[in-house]
Image (cartoon, rainbow, N blue to C red):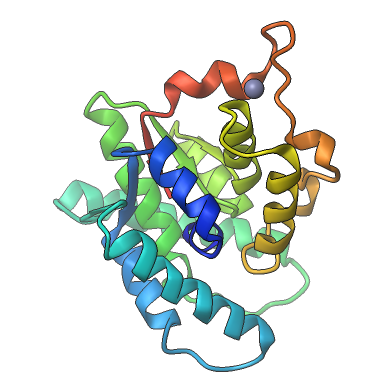
Length: 216
Ligand SMILES: [Zn+2]
């Protein structure tokens, strides 16, 4: 999600303005981003490396995104372990046919974002988890945290007349090469990036007030 925002300078600018003071990420996610800036490899890895570099430069170094400490007490550790386990189960269920065991490390970023979202919610703030990972959405829901993917965030920018539907559609297409939204919920046309508020019925506009603290 951070990658999707950071790789397009215009979108990044509008995120910073629209979600000013409301964007959070976690220490463990930032560590993953740093690791990605050092990776070399095929075309996709190269795209991720560039996006990771943009993320550090445009969002983290500028302090536009607040970095939360994931593990603050024993309770956080218990919750963290439980969420990692849940994410691993969800992944195994999807890949029933290949028996490859998955490392816990793989789910560290998503689990840390959910732990911090739960803490934020428990301290009385409204929180939405911004993630393109379908399993992370399911695990967050189990903890009572709602999530949105990059496409939803772009629609919200359209609703607030910060970008056009065409710009949202183009941006979604190129970001999806790096951080893909599950195909079942992937928008298929520019029409899905329009504000539906002709009769007060746009879900995104209605939910706007709940986006107090957006985890990326
Ligand atoms: Zn709208």
